[in-house]
Length: 487
Ligand SMILES: Nc1ncnc2c1ncn2[C@@H]1O[C@H](COP(=O)(O)OP(=O)(O)OP(=O)(O)O)[C@@H](O)[C@H]1O
Ligand SMILES: [Mg+2]
Image (cartoon, rainbow, N blue to C red; front, side, top):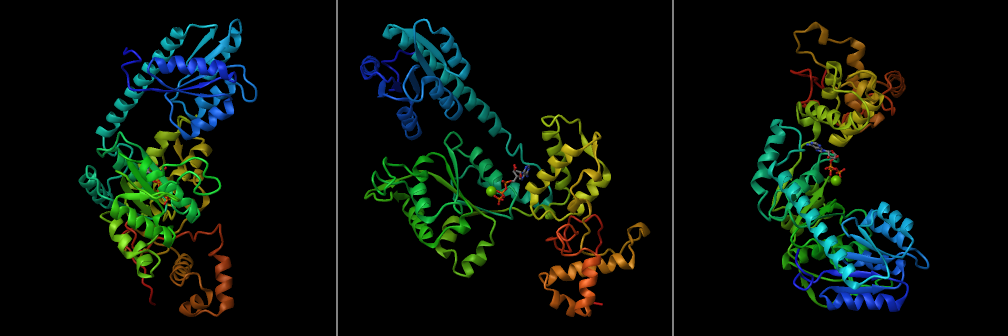
């Protein structure tokens, strides 16, 4: 163990509602080489902890307002990496034990010698170092098995894996596109984990979730007093993510004003804080994602073309789940393995009929929808294998909107009624559910169309219309396909 004087200056927050006492402890710690700071109430201490980094908190127990036990609980819950040492009056051993239960690292009884406190502080610091080391080692192990949690090696995904392997070690700005639930965030985290910045932070922000002004101060920070609530300066995520990765999610929704500022930041590699005057450099890798068709946003002028090129240095396009062939089965199995036990179920797999339904369904919500579907099915399951009854109705009753005709197998053939139903459904999809147009295409009058829509429950929430898949989806069980639109 190194002595306090030779270690880097560790920051210690001393909390005591008796200012005299706080001062004595603060000065004693400062003399031993620590950067000690004091606060005189638990509330003030908590506020400070939300804004600044401390290595250790030393707090008195009995204070007016929020007491030390509550403060300890809060720190343990929200800032579990900051050890708390509690100082308690002699004799109240019970409270001291209560704080240990609440997660305090150690306690000291009053009156105490300052050296006693220093020993406790040093122990807490070395314990913290040890935990960080373990965490780092664990992360290193994680990193050495790239894409471990990433399921699927369909041809479509193999291309993605190739791109990821190629760019993992670079610092290039990367754009990830793909429908909702295709795994964009998972890929972003994977890229970070496999990069040289893995020890640095990964910070994600959803650009669609905040109004423009807030987004700007979140990203770029603000100077003290920049606006009414800006009581303290704030670094901003570009700077906070230095040595790490900043993930700009839903970048397609970024307001135009912000787009201009982002472009500038990416070009200059510096940010200017809201209300600030100086340029602050950052060393942060940027990964952006969107589920929008960003090229058409560019074409229609809603996304700046110059920013698009800046962000799109490397492009990772995630295919929708329905284009990933049998990945859907591997993913389903993975989710069963992952969730069954924690959910207290002995489910180990699924029946072949379930596999067929999973392959046929179009998964508009992609991997996330599949994940929810499997979780729900596990909850309902009565056997060790998931059965068709465990699937949600829209998956269970899903009928692909095309008809197989080029088949040798008579069991694949369907009735005229089924053909009619699926064909109407297909036409409705093709005309964007516009009934007038559909009636025209089908050669029905509107009344007939309405009758048939009702009869086949097309267009109704529970009916089997969820398809956003294309007729040529490679996912279909029934290949060689066909459904000619004519005739
Ligand atoms: N290939 C995969 N293997 C295992 N799990 C996956 C895979 N792809 C996605 N998931 C899981 O599916 C869920 C959705 O993924 P994620 O949040 O990354 O999607 P997204 O593309 O960011 O969606 P959105 O556009 O809605 O934000 C997550 O729980 C993720 O862990
Ligand atoms: Mg996402």
